[in-house]
Length: 239
Image (cartoon, rainbow, N blue to C red; front, side, top):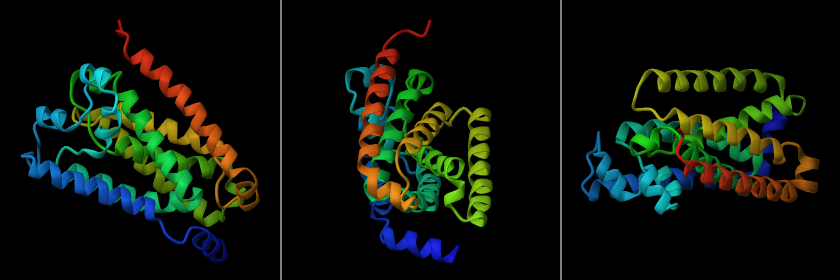
């Protein structure tokens, strides 16, 4: 296992994407405070003004699908998401490489925001990086499910338990409280898992070097097509 970790860290020495995303989200939160948002519980209207996602507004301004993923509803919301991203993002970034990880994170966040348009964002302002973070979780789970023979067995056992606990606990909290956007969680999780099964993992050394760029391009192309379909459906009444 030690040899595997050494090769993994040598292949991706710096997890600068994860660090940059954490800095970006934290900086945006500070800016929301300077713009008058409350530290613990900012008003939904204020979050909407700053770029939150709410179906009527997002249909006219699609950029909210992205800006909503870097806004947070208070310091606790931010802290939990950044802790989860720091814990899992650095592993996933080394599993998939800096560039592919960035694509995976952005696309998962997009699908999380799109999924929210069918549920939470139809009735309230939706914000947060959790859809993208669940995508990262899904990507790690995909690696464990599809390539367990390429990973050290102790690492697979440890990660599988931690990931399933995180997913189960988070979804349970989402189904039992009204302030958690489980649609974004599930949308990001499914997207991250699906995208990661197309992409090549960096620890699968030969496959990554032979087809890594091609598989990443295919994943992006399929994602754009699927996202467009979801966008068109979101614009239609559910009933």
